[in-house]
Image 1 (cartoon, rainbow, N blue to C red):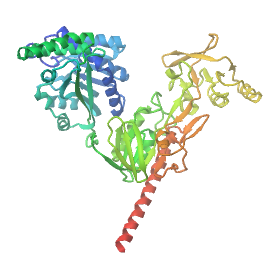
Image 2: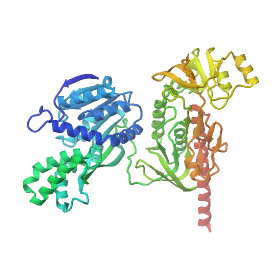
Image 3: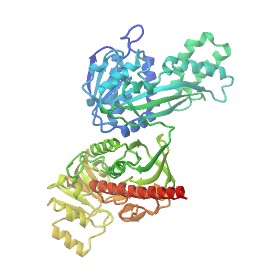
Image 4: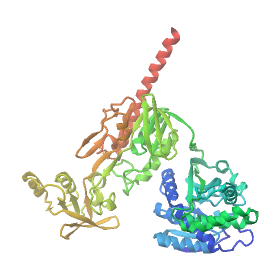
Length: 611
């Protein structure tokens, strides 16, 4: 980390001394809150990752505290440089320490400044992501801060706003009798002032120019008998007691003291509950907008596309260009995300897979396609009346037709090092990434059968190909003849591991400890299509030694009326361009099917009117 405490004004002025350093108790409280909120932080980061149109390069964190969010942001987005803003030099020192401990210090900078002042002047150009967790509600003018955030983002950039919503609830255990009134007093003392709670963040975001991409409410429960909860609640309750003790009846004061004394031991049944509202808001490009996601709404469309990869997006564009109402629901886990570039894409050779998807999403949205981040959990109903339910707070979708474009998962050999190098120096397809390892030392690893096919294709790219049989049987006489003709040596002992340097293959270690130097490894995955939804509707997946797939007709139609499949879900061997072409073809077929259904409906209506 470049530890520079840029000498601007503080993050937020204290009432008496704007440069007053935090007390030790505050730092301790922030550390406990960071530990207690780790799971929630991870959940929110995944939602944010799905909402972004491209990996961020510049992230601003408004109010960094002790640096837990700073480090998490840097770890989750390795492409980014994180700029942490806070008022306190002591806290910024904590940020620096947290970043060092997390191994991300080289990509973190600290800035000492006041968010009530012109903090935007301190940022290094346009930001891709701004993160503000419980830091804006106490500003003199939160609306002004949001306008500055809007101006600081690039078009398509996102603001993540996390703020408390409502009050804090307090519940006592069964042993702590007579605590109803005390619970109310504690709730009053722990809840934020009414002027903060009354802020309408959605309205302020819209007024600043943002469009809302997602809004979630996350419950946050702290238990006195679990983890660090006891120590955290003890600190909170002591703070409240010091403010209200003179107003408490003697019995309640004694009960509160008893609870406080019991909390560090983990024997207290008291707990607190609160709600955090998370809003992801996007700065749209000039003249563009983005649909707002409301949690309680119902979405009615012609077609629900399940999966937002090349096939799903291509199908959605083909449908939307024919003025069909389309929603795409995408879990945000593209199969080729690990690869540096996608190949054999005419006119887009070597494009980053994530950038390709970001462009595809923008194209789809430009035609009115609605893209929702979420994981589909169930599809029920029948043709013309399907219902799609999803996790992550995505609204229920009602659709006339379904396109399954969830792709597949690669089941990799359980050889140490394979997963670490997958998509970089561990490959399976000579057409997708073979050119990038030409003339290098290539190790072809066997699995269920002798990898003659891979040896044949990769030997056209390099004369340094070696087959490691690993789990494959001994070659037949004909297979030996082929390998000899190719000039490919064969190693029999089982592979113990790939010798890795980060994601780069350096060698292959076999049983006995011998290491063969290598620059790339070729494996044979099993291609496991995501068939759960198809099978839940009554379909039957096809399975063989290579994996599984959804069986389809040439048009992409499955055996279930109203359901189509596109891309790797139905063709595991399809490369990116072939998957996209499949999506276009399926989109056209679905539109034709809907057009015929619309025509028949119109004809029936006309006959009824005539009669």
